Amino acid sequence: MLAGPSGVGKGTIGRALLAREPRLWFSVSATTRAPRPGEVDGTDYLFMTRDEFERLRRAGGFVESFEVYGQSKGTPRAPLDEHLARGSDVLLEVDVQGAMAVREQIPEALLVFVAPPSLDVLRQRLVDRGTDDAEQVARRLAEAEREIGLSAAFDAVVVNDDLDRAVDEVAAILEARRAGR
Ligand code: 5GP
Image (cartoon, rainbow, N blue to C red; front, side, top):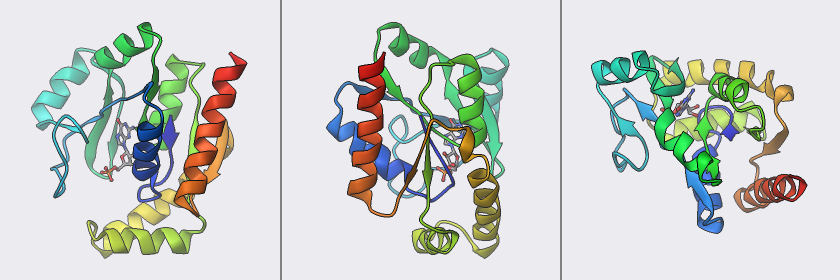
């Protein structure tokens, strides 16, 4: 499970990992947020209306779900259970509270925290991404600081200073876990 602050590069690391690890299945999260340019329904997220999301949540359809920056995000239960039952390794990309909630239900989950080299670098990445206004960037940075404070609860912390190196590190952590079980 990859978690860490918004804009830290979890998505990029996750995609690189999936390209290298064909045995890994990516859990597509559901969200009420509108798609960003280039985002594909069913691949990047399952884009849902508030009603659809709430209905699924009330029916117990999420392993975890939270409000993240004013939008609902959640990990759909059925496809995750299906892949775990088949013995697949699954990759979840969630925020820190989501990661903690998944760990409660799946204690053997491997939690990797992706950290920015510094808050200044994270601020620059959020600004460069161009999807948030100044107020949202400030909010995401304050939240990032709080999340970094919780990173000690994770199995490993990987600093995303260099993408290839960070992906190598996550792949090695995964391999060590596979070897040890
Ligand atoms: P974004 O809107 O930038 O795609 O994501 C914002 C935040 O929501 C990120 O920190 C991301 O990890 C988190 N997120 C994405 N999917 C989920 C999910 O299924 N559950 C939780 N708890 N957080 C999620």
